[in-house]
Amino acid sequence: MKLLRFSPLLMGVLLLGACVSMPKGPSVMVLPGTGKSFDQFRYDDVECRQFADVQIGGTSPSDIAADSAAKSAVVGTAIGAAAGAALGGRSGAAAGAGGGLLVGSAAGAGAGETSAYGLQRRYDYAYIQCMYAKGHKVPVSGRLTSSSQPGPSYVPPPPPPPPPSR
Image (cartoon, rainbow, N blue to C red; front, side, top):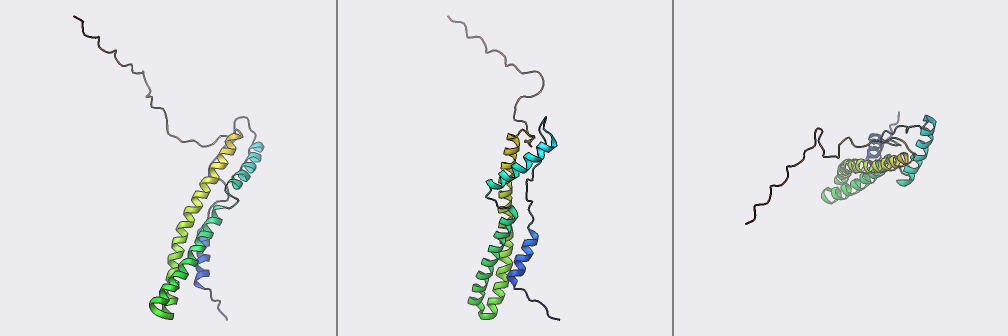
């Protein structure tokens, strides 16, 4: 029986690709607008997903995350191999490449996740704008912006009268 050997780089990229999982679509809730049928909502949903996709350049957050992770793994392996070769010769290069792959993969996973989050947020904003423009209900912040307090309104007392003139 023959065992397959994978390079450390390939293994790192495969493992990181398995970890990154971003949705391909909006991550916000939108409800059908008043007087809108569910069929109209579904039609608008498809159109707004396409609009949002165009706004982010047609790439999905998971594509961005995987690309960033793979690039960081390659760079980390190359830097680790160079540093290992400079410090320990041939055996140091192999150890350095392995260490560089681990460090580069970890950094790439973090950078990929950050990139994917930003892209997902931009997608969601474009999707919400489109659905709102079509008359659907979109999420809003739950905080009140008014500073008025419930109850009777407060009227400050009038200013004191001027002093008597002599």
